[in-house]
Amino acid sequence: MTAVLTISLFNDRITETIIIVEPWAEEIVLPPQTTIEFGIYSDKIEKVESSIDDQFLTIWLWQGCTLVAFIDGEDVTPASFSIPVP
Image (cartoon, rainbow, N blue to C red; front, side):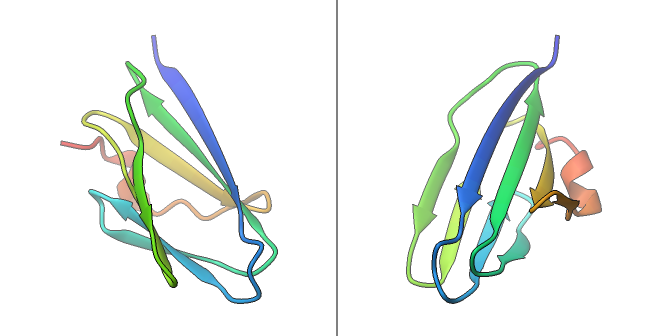
């Protein structure tokens, strides 16, 4: 059975935030006052690790998962997110 974990983040800043998704090393630009939703698909739910600084939010996902991403309902999923984490 595939489990889904949803994470929703709102950028309340007046500037964009760059979200780096590892291990794919993909960057997604989150404009000010917008929301990104990630759907993480996996056979098991594990810990999502993250770090943040003045310009970047980085998240690390676990082995075997795939991911979809939507900004304010618009699909912004890079093709690489459909490749399971090695």
